[in-house]
Length: 475
Length: 93
Image (cartoon, one colour):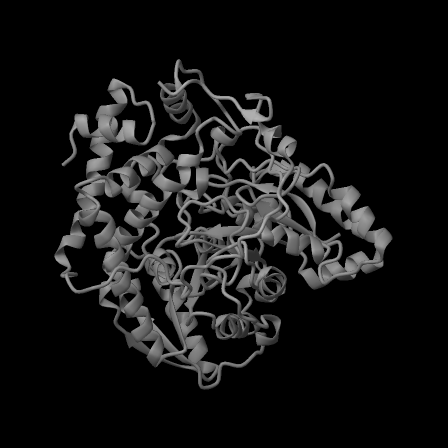
């Protein structure tokens, strides 16, 4: 069986052989993995595939295997969030997106590695050890959905789900040379996804091509009353897949090409914009003056929300528990031992930003700056159809290179986190290479205008071959 | 700038035990991040309203009716620390 297959090819293979055979073949590939992309492999995958064979392949994803980030609840499988504090925890309910996948007939292969509680851009802070980038095993796959991106890039799953709070789907997509979408805030239910910063995050798909992203969005998108920020709105994702950008207006925000950008990344993105021009689109430079404040605003808001969300991990109802003579000392010891350093740093900073005397200086200020960033997006997107920029200013870095200094690591999110503040949709597609490492082009759109974002990405893919390149180290 | 005492206080608020040595490490790293956050002071935001989230929905409620919920034993299945159908934890004080 071919190692890298589109969903359409997987379905063809299932028709020729069986879902059981296809699932078994993916499990064999996973067994030989060199990248530590999965933290748990489903023991029931083959059995589920066999049941789908017996039922006669009903549903749009009947028998198609998928990998799930380890912060999305699946009944009967661990949901560790890459943390010791959730050791042994097995969710008693499915996330909304998992219910939708199971209704569509998908087979869950396993849970993928991530930065602890999705806090990171390198998948190095996981309790289960780092994941390797399939293009260079010494380098990081990006994060925090590094496991999901790496297994798709390595042919260990046709597609996967991740979550994106400040770039956690798009960063690893760019670093691993795959496609990743952060949908509009409210487009996909967050029910059953462990919250890090709930005003910013969305579940997002990762795949080897734009078509499979749309296929997955048609399954997981839509209203769910159990998520109070879910928006009741119908979008037809696959219908948007048209090879045509004639008359499309592209905005290029110069603030996304700031200091420290790798020259090959800058060139690859401009080459892509010029390719669009040849295909009938036009471009203009736009200015978004408040983008330079987005990173600080993003981190204050994310940390503040995290300090509140992660208060639930107290050793009482599930997961790891340490000893203590009373409740306070038990909880304090449990959290000291159960959380990793970066998670503790963010909880402490968030607690500080919300504490008496500092709330207005940090948290309230960040929320006001968020308004200014949102206004920058509204203004820019009122003149053009999409915005284009590098997803990441640099290609994948070496393991260990940025982990010691938190601020250095935070700065790598400079081009991805503004999108989460504004809640707009954004996709990363492969658009070139530098020294054998993939480069990602980021395409941002208006709220709920995923159709234009997908059409723009699809047209690029139809007219280039970057998405067909595979990492030689894992071939 | 936050001090060692501030770090100890935040650690207590967040219920995270911090050793003497860690207090100094946290103080340095936290101060470098807070210094970066300080750049927001450059912006005049007096008349700017805050944005808590961008979903244009407010006060989302459901009908106040009893709905199906998880069985007690399922909810208690993830811990050893239970007694008489309840979670068991050390005394507060």
